Length: 278
Ligand SMILES: Nc1ncnc2c1ncn2[C@@H]1O[C@H](COP(=O)(O)OP(=O)(O)OP(=O)(O)O)[C@@H](O)[C@H]1O
Ligand SMILES: [Mg+2]
Image (tube, rainbow, N blue to C red):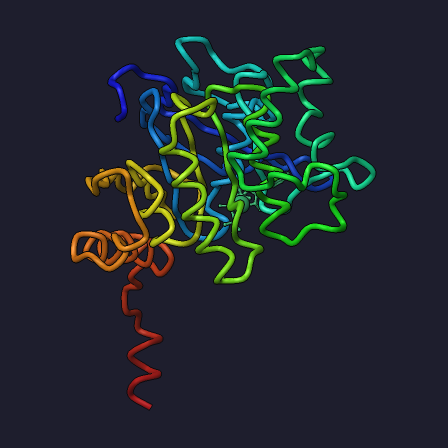
């Protein structure tokens, strides 16, 4: 159950990129505002290229905000920190390290690979369903298994906020469904991952509704908030919920909002008149 304590505060933020030889500056996020409560699972959807990844990297502290407030537990985000971890679309595992070594990478880097860290690794291996696979190398893993390792690695450092950028989009449809169910199971389980807050970017509206407590819909770029929709489906959430009328109605509503952003209504012009006439 989400508590009412604000974890992440996003107030009228702008984020831009400089590109080209002249360093032309263009906004990717413009005037985005919403709050994330502690323990909430937030899904973010929006048209392709609207600024989702840019926004997530700003929350990770890898891209600076140009203006506005972006703060975690009341402290402005000014760079990366161990209380946040990232999971990307492509599993970014070190090929020369085993599964266990990959999961422990962050712990080791921060000098925290003690008895507690090792116990934590074993617990995480079991949690993500990779018990007995700790000695394997990334090349021996399927795409779904690699993302399980990525997830375990993101949880290993005991972050408060987990940021996921389309983590399942490179998987085949069937594996993707399995991973959605796995992530929900992991999220709802008691244990070392309990009490965390998550922000999950996806193009897949049913995935967003199945996973999240709230779905944030972004406009086409530069991104601002279009809708903030509470998903009232009860937890624990089981796969069968995907067939419920409530689920399907939410998916319809949110898909409509995203489609409206992707294909803005175009006013007829005199050129159209001429084309239609002849
Ligand atoms: N490093 C960069 N330098 C310059 N421009 C960038 C950079 N990264 C992103 N952009 C631009 O910022 C805008 C938003 O990109 P971003 O990757 O955040 O969108 P997105 O919503 O994640 O897209 P997708 O749905 O395809 O993943 C785009 O116009 C993109 O071209
Ligand atoms: Mg992206």
